[in-house]
Length: 259
Image 1 (cartoon, rainbow, N blue to C red):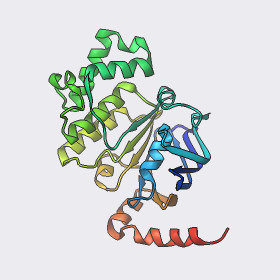
Image 2 (image 1 turned 90 degrees about the vertical axis):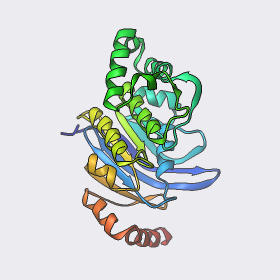
Image 3 (image 1 turned 60 degrees about the vertical axis):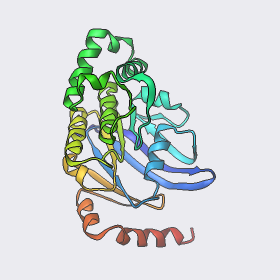
Image 4 (image 1 turned 180 degrees about the vertical axis):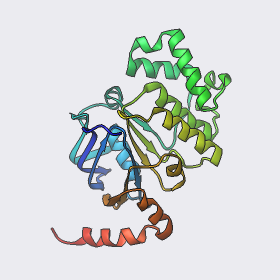
């Protein structure tokens, strides 16, 4: 069941990096209860879109709009976007030496959900429950954040953060990359815990395998900074069978036509 109102609206979004145009008019509309998948070849702009949505300062928005529950996100700093309910699981989580996972998550939850959510008994009970869901033991919670973590542990850490922050709109930027089959199932289990009628999910991926655990309602193919095709789950199967050339060639031809 989906919410009738748009949760995230991306309208004709254009963005560049160091003066080079990357996004060239991307439009998406995601409602609560929907899972969208964004696929495309390397260099098509998928990760740029995730960074622009979250407000990364290296990316310049040159046109279009982004709204969360009707509010314009573009003037807001990344931390304000997080407080509004936007969450990004990044492709390459970084280590923060000297800060434990518990300390980090407590600070994040307090900043986004308020002090009531970090009262000791409530916070620790919730943290341990979510950690168990992701097969993360008590010793993990007392380690410096992402320091010495395996690739799979870093990705599970991102999902633990997501569960603790309780966002309205989740963007997963290639969260499945580098995960073995067991780790992928654990990560998908964590996302499934959050999914509900008021939550929107955008999965950015190259591969079908995460979508077998988190079936999308809508699939979009991004080519050269534009959404070349949208459809249902059947698009994923078609990409697995045919690759991207059948989408890339018409999109390139259309982009080269004069306005």
